[in-house]
Length: 184
Image 1 (cartoon, helix red, strand yellow):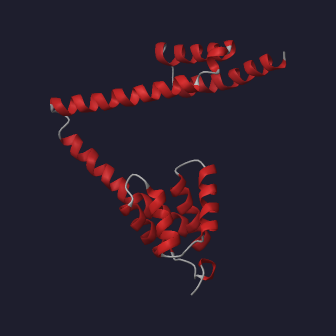
Image 2 (cartoon, one colour):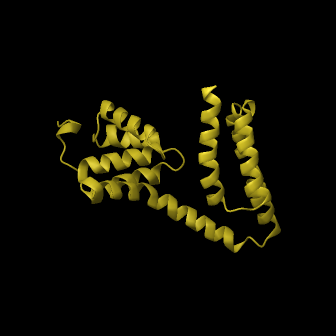
Image 3 (tube, rainbow, N blue to C red):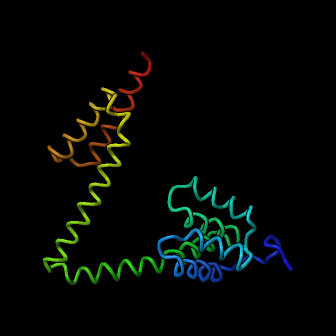
């Protein structure tokens, strides 16, 4: 019996179909399905190789399993393999989201749907504000950080200046301001 290291390289088509299969099976939680498919069923990776690829996927920005699929695709078939693996991983979820958006779009005029969307938006805004509040704890203790926050908020929310312009000015100013206060 061959070990995962002895296997022939997967083609872009193989990679697309592999990750398409994983994404179809694992709506909402791909890691257990990815592990089972790559290690147990198809013996493409060993436990150690899977752990290494997962670690790589975790340090890169973006979803871990998408990063893993790109790394495995690149390892097997270069950039084309990486693109094929990522495409296989995202094509079904993208089609599902597009279908749901289309379906919702056809009924947004209904009061019940408008209420549901408003409720979901409120919940999402609440989660975002709660997370921002927790992440901002250190900032609330820093006068320079509060000053930058107030200036950016005032410029964007109250004066309605373009965000790109505000950030282009605020980022260097914030870095300079914080650098001065740290030297004291």
